[in-house]
Image (cartoon, rainbow, N blue to C red):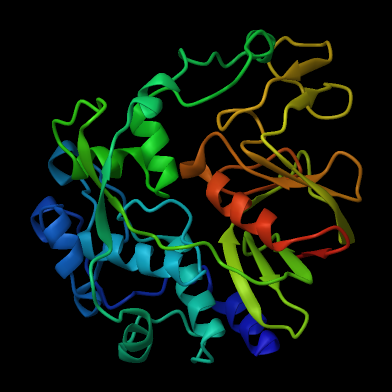
Length: 339
């Protein structure tokens, strides 16, 4: 199944599969209102694709309740779609193919009756969360872009309660706010959130960092695909490593040493700087250290940009995906860079 999966993925992942029915416009009238009831009752067999972004104010895209349901179910299954935002895209399609590979289904990226029958066993996918005082107290002042200013801080935490809750529940902040209109995000407020389920379990023996498909796949010793995550892997200016490397260790809430002679040039900063830890730090909440010096698999302060912008050579995941993977790996796990 690994060979079939890789071949199908390479041929089809970015080919523009329609999940069910392709439409030619993205007008808001095509999309049901986004509510918890709409998401929980959505039928995956009625998903519509919105292939193009909105072009005018009259043609605004809104999150699709059925896509939200699909993303949450894929996340539960270990086939991460990245940020749950209610929009179709490459990350959703790759997650469907991953799910098919995990369940010995034909790996074609189609959201057909067979996939839906295994993936959607019914029940709600949106739940409630009551904001606590600690959520409010943890918020930090706005974080500057300049690394020298960042280095003056003690911790690069969340800038708003909405941001903190959205990331905790694997959601895009815009989706959270659309689902909870008028919420002030004060202690005691109850908000609707994605019920994404528990983290994956198992022991990873081998990781593939697929540069062409922009995905990280984790396998156990028997070759079973345990989990897969959309990823940002290097760039033309600062490419990621090639070949096979080894996990050397894992750091939680790591700080980051900025060295323009080794890494990249940020702004006008020419000196080595120590950037404090935090979910909004340059490497997010996790650093999985690789045997290739200065390279690792890590989180990000901007989860919505995963697989959409280049990285500075490392492998970037959402913070929650990096945290899950960190629990599955131990020193000695191999990481093979493909593509």
